[in-house]
Amino acid sequence: MASVAFVLIAALAVGSALGLVLKRNAIHGALFLVVNLASVAALYLMLGAEFLAAAQVIVYAGAIMVLFVFAIMVLIPGKEETGPDPRRPWRLVAVPVGALLGVQLLVVVRALRGGAPAGAQPVPGSVEALARLLFTQYLFPFELTSVLLLAAMVGVLLLARRRT
View: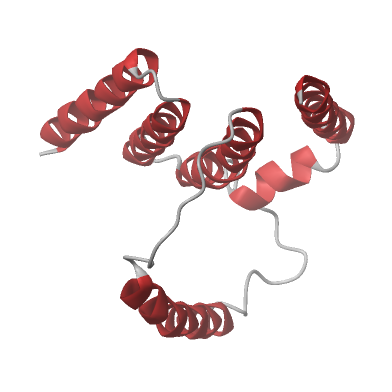
């Protein structure tokens, strides 16, 4: 069963990578990249690397792709949409569903609030062990990466500003 799931996810990853390269529309390419990053996260899950999968989805498929789509929208403005909103009923349902998911998140967080006892050593390879290394021994490279990403964002905005 695991090999069938792997083949399906790998096919999705390869297909979305091809769609990314072959699509002419930049927004469609960005959406194919989101699918590709999500399929890579699914492959991480199959390998048992839950933290890497979560980081892949949160950082790359979430934050970085929002930045890419924002840059694409700034650099390639589209036409304004007019007329009634065809998705208005779904948008009205989104608020209560979002509130329900928020309540569910609070219930789960309160149930897991106990955590590990004070003074316990983290399990090697766990999120806590990785975080301890990341924020102690590897703090400087971590912060340097964030400064480089900030400089890249400022550079993109300056390049976009000069063209308009």
